[in-house]
Image 1: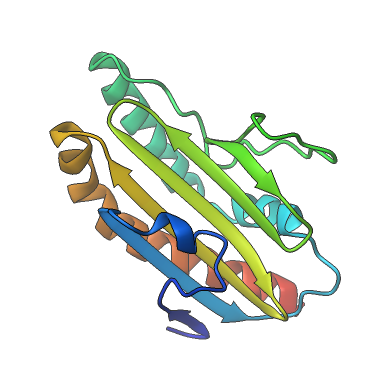
Image 2: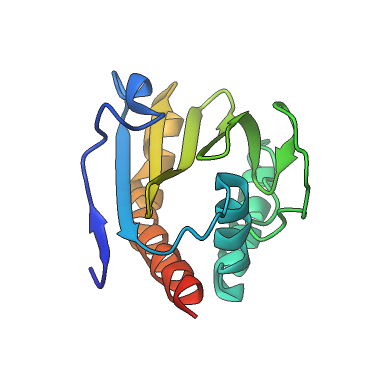
Length: 167
């Protein structure tokens, strides 16, 4: 995968305890230069790598979901340059659950599904893990088109981020 590998959600992952009963689990990892970057900085850098066309897809998603009475998640790139975020604070399309220097856990939970995303430094390897639990049939149906896009876009973003870190 051009330096980005799909890996198992192992015991070293901050999301490892969330995998039981998950409908979707996806983990990618790449070797890069941490250079003192925090997990928060890695998340902000990843959000900065999101292509405009993907935010266009999010806008279409948000319009459709509003028509179905669902919430508008906004833009993935809309991660503010916050220096001291607190759990419960919104960071882009996710809510911050926990933050350490080497790991950030973000979440979006609604009546249909719970999505958890982590960015975690493991030495000079950056890992992005996603765990999704669906709450009902609509959540499962929603994941049918989302899962393949996710399996493509997350490694794509990580590759772009690794290239930026190599400069």
